[in-house]
Structure formats: structure tokens, C-alpha cells
Image 1 (spheres, rainbow, N blue to C red):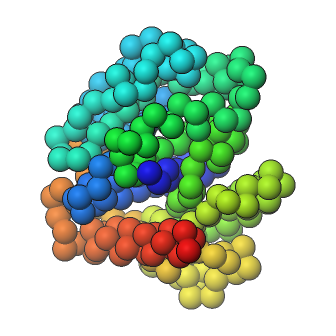
Image 2 (spheres, helix red, strand yellow):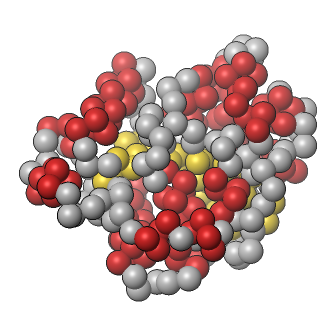
Length: 251
């Protein structure tokens, strides 16, 4: 089982659309796939038309009083499940801090799912917190959508430094550019002449496009409605590139 976290310190960069669309692609390829909506804003749960509620909330789930498998819901798509968000997830830092090994709690909770899923996508809230650090230790890779702007690249640099200080050498960082608008001079400049802060960014970028925004109206993955639009092709290319990077890391 591979655990892939869609994460960025910044909000509004395309984490949820990335998690939803890549998970959909993985399931369409035949992989048993789970999306865990860890963000109390519950956008991934909204896209999958599932109520953002977990019985007992984060306290019972992270306290070990509720089996994770019992909180999982099926979606409208074959081989694709969702563990919905809950508004109580806003207090997860407090819950985690009560455990002896607070940085490894998420890793422990995910362990029973290894026999059931090939991929788990974590849709993470924007922050650097105890929850974030749990994600770093639980994940095999961080998928980091990054808008091609100066401040977004600065945030990416902060994340790289944070992981280096925590000695997270086994965690694969896979940043990529998202919400790219080639009409903007700065976006074009950074794409064509990547600065040092963009070292390691994947070759595929996700455009800023209305069909991605319309996911909120359709409440469904983009790829469930179109496979040939530029945005859909970009997600397919991104997923192919991510899988190749993960296979290379395994070797």
C-alpha cells in the first residue's frame, strides 16, 4: 500500500482537486483506492457527495476507540472509497498530543488498511502542525501542488527545509506546478526558467481552467466527465509521472 499525501503549507493551491482526480485515475486503472479527507473544510467529501461526518469524530478515531475500516464509505466509483472529513478534525492536534508517540499515530491508524488498499490519498489541511508531521511520517510521498509565484516557491523551500531538519529522508517529495495561467508573465517566466527553489518540480503542470472549477458544480472528479480536455490530459500525465517516480524510488 502506498500512502500519498496531497499537502502544502498554503491553502488554495489545488490539493483537493489533485487528491480526487489522481485517486479516480488510480481506481480506473484497477487499484483499490481510498481518499481520506483530513481537512475539516471537507472539500473532498463534498466532491464525492458524502456527508462530512465520522461517528465519534476525530477523538474516537484517533483514540483507537473506533476502527478505521468502519468509518470508510463507498463512492459512486468502483474501487474508490472515502474516509470522510469531520469538523472535529480541527482539533486533531489536541487529540494527537495526548498520545505517547504523537508523531506516529496516523501511521499506526493506517496500518490495518494495508491488506485492503493499493493506494491511500490523504487530502490534508494547509498548515504546519502536529497533524502535518503525522502525515510526513505516515506517507510514502508528498504531492505538493505549487502555484508558479514567488511566495509559493518560498513556501515550497520552507517545506523542503523542514523535512530536511526532521531527517525525513525516506519521504519522497513530488512538487508540481498547479493553477498555471500562461497568460501571466510571472507564471511563464517560472515555467520556462525555473529558479533554484523549483529544483525537483515534476515536468507536468496543471492549468488554471474552468472545467476544474466546475468540479464543485458537478460534485465529481473531472475525469469522470471528460478524458480529453487539456486539464484531464494534464492529470493523466501527472499521474503517469508520479507512478514512474515512485517506481524509481522503490528501486
